[in-house]
Length: 129
Image (cartoon, rainbow, N blue to C red):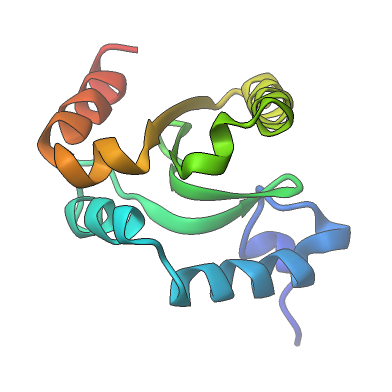
């Protein structure tokens, strides 16, 4: 008997699941240096919370997500400073917030130059939200 895909990723849009799943797989195989750095810190259970990387949610793929805490972490490259991308990011954040998720963003530079500070911020979000 075939499993319903909603049992695998309840957060993804059912009509786009296959496409999102493929994109997520590609993203996991081609992570940026900043994402690799942060994943090294998050891949173990962090402060009792489990994170997933490149996880489909709604019509998006979150860089990192803790489903239990409803926390999404995005690591943004330079193109996120472009005005249109900032608008797109805000729309995405609003949609995810309406779903009950908190979205926090870090730049590639933050993740690479001071990953411990990024991890501290994540810990604060997990415990003091």
